[in-house]
Length: 201
Image (cartoon, rainbow, N blue to C red):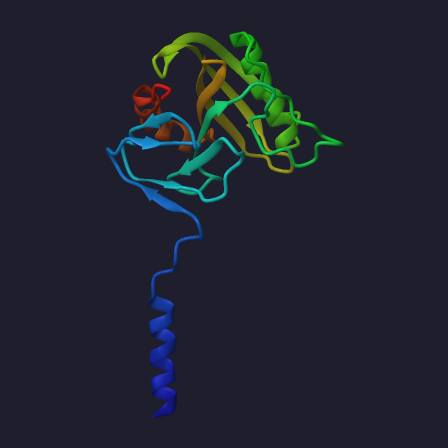
């Protein structure tokens, strides 16, 4: 009899839903949401998962299927002389810093060099860059691809950025080139088009 109840208890535990990873939260469809602890807001076109672990003090990441399969990254109000990511090894591998005087070509160079340092790879390339309007301001849209050090999976990416009131605001989307990038691209475009920066109070 005891073994019978023990078997039932094990089955119940196996069938119970697993808790979400600590700190991760659901971002509901259609609700304007502030991102990256900043004035930047977007309206998600579907339910996304906001990851609890942030890549920087003014950055955050969302995903649909896990960050290895698709990642929507937000950079909100990066101030002058600050990096995009959390600086993990300032002495040996310092990250480049944003400058409020940067031109559009400087921003793509900042992004490329930041990735090269942050993920430890030389396989990172900006493929294109063109003017656009982002968050109501003149900005740029760029595409890129990269391979994480130690992996063989090529990832494609797209981003939009603008400098507003001397701070950098940017959204990027990246995913493996096969299937996931194309599958998530329409959602990225809708979210990027919804981006707004709230006025300073």
